Each structure stands twice: as structure tokens, then as C-alpha cells.
Length: 171
Image 1 (cartoon, rainbow, N blue to C red):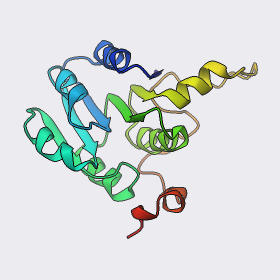
Image 2: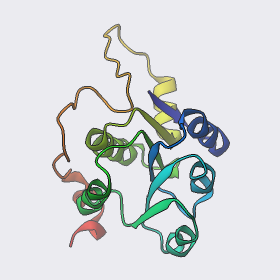
Image 3: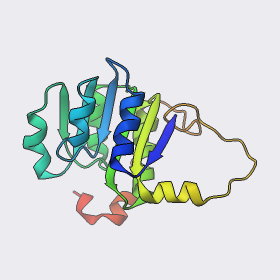
Image 4: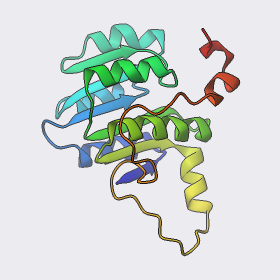
């Protein structure tokens, strides 16, 4: 199942409702760990964020494997994949309301790599799009936390658009 929300309380509650004891959760955009503190009581968390403030805060949390890096970078995805090859829940909160296109691409590459049972995304733009769209009668539905349209295994190729949008990602 894929759930979208915007309100931080709703996002956190959605996660807590989906996570089972001993699940493995990948949390993209953990910031300083507000959500991480709540969910790490129930499960193992691999948390990823590129903000300098996150480094010290995340080191204080038990049961959390923190990766300091930009979730758009292919090598960060590869580092997470080296730690775990699968997760039960993918949690994505990359700024809440900004850049739905980037959030969707991050969801796409991370979920197609890790094949989670559930994904929870916090992003106003995606939620607004889904709530505003009128869908056709075509029945394309993925029941897991990833899209069936990308069923290959392993890490997908680098999405070149990230370099075009964000020059700071270039080496």
C-alpha cells in the first residue's frame, strides 16, 4: 500500500499504524529525528538525510542506522542497499510541500530498489495532485509499497534529471 499525507501528525500516525514489531523501515528525510524517535521504538530504522543538523541528533538515537547523504545521489542509494537489500516500510518526508516531481522520482528509485510492503509519503503537492485528478477507468493498481510497472530487481539506473535540476549533485 502507498499512502500520501501532508499533515505531520497524520504522516506519523500512518507510519505507526503500518509498522509491525521488528520491521525494517527506511526513512528518507529524517531531519533531526522527530518521526524517527517514534518509529524506532517499534522497529529497526535506516534513516537518511543530508542536513548537517541531523548528524549529531541521529547519533543519539538507539536502533537507528543513519546515513548522512542526499537521497537523490545514486551512491547514497547504493550505501543503503549494502546495509539492507529489502525493507518493510519506506517513509519519505522531503520537505513536506515542495518539489512533488523530485519526491516522486525519489520514491520511484528507492521503492523499486527495496520493494517495501508499504510506503508513506508526506508531500502536499502529490496529495493535491491525487485529490484533484480524475482518473480513467484503466485499472493500474499496485497493492504493495512500490509500483508494479517497475518490477526489475536491483538498483535502477541513475536518473539523469537530478543532475540537470541540482548542479550541486555533480561531482
